[in-house]
Image (cartoon, rainbow, N blue to C red):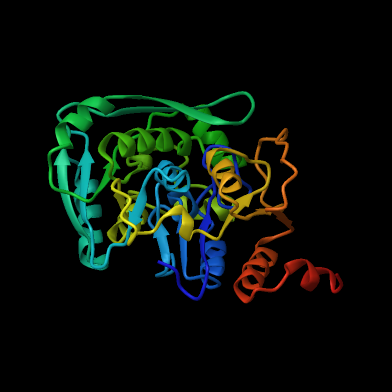
Length: 334
């Protein structure tokens, strides 16, 4: 799978209020890093901007737990050469908003999407812990799995509402901070992706009922959310040519051996970071992109590279591509 340029991973973990990308994507930063490498694997939270997804052609849309499994050598990822069969499940009754949103994705992006109404409603509840970390509860996941597991599709997309208190929702729109909805979406995607061995992603619907929705000027990072109607376009555009899961680990497909670096926000440390350290994959940590977690202790490891911003991260990737010690370029001396 190797090319003359490196392959990388770009993550923006959800639910921990990343100052860049913790709201409606870090698309500009993703596309910058993608321009420096062959393939860039990005979790949906990095590129999902509600009804906007302008990720570069060499960006692979990879659900978070699927990315973790690949980095931990449990699966490989198979490139989609044409397009995926996308299944979109919705709660019953099928809404006019979902029909129009799916038809828009079919017509404008060429997506192959089949709509299916769930026999049992999927209920998702979002909340924020006192420490600022988002969380949520989900009901109806096993019923969803049983309904779709024998259907013919490559990628599962879920287009259902998320219940969130008006207090939490209003606070987010007015003050920013942690997105209330992302963590419960990540929980759902992880559970479904593991159970089905197919990538699964979620986008919410019915935000138009929110009292403040599209009635106030919000922070620029929230703007893509506030102007959107049904939030589904980003996941369908990402899913159209997303890689599929290869549990056989065919060596023709992309494995963790093909990954040369990962770019991560500062103050987060979890499964993908540990997998990279275990496999000697450099982690480029961007200090300007902080999270609500303040007690992260990084191990003393030569493969952890701290940079100030994404411009510097791109420079490090270019140095790695060129076989040049980035420290010499940065400091101008040995």
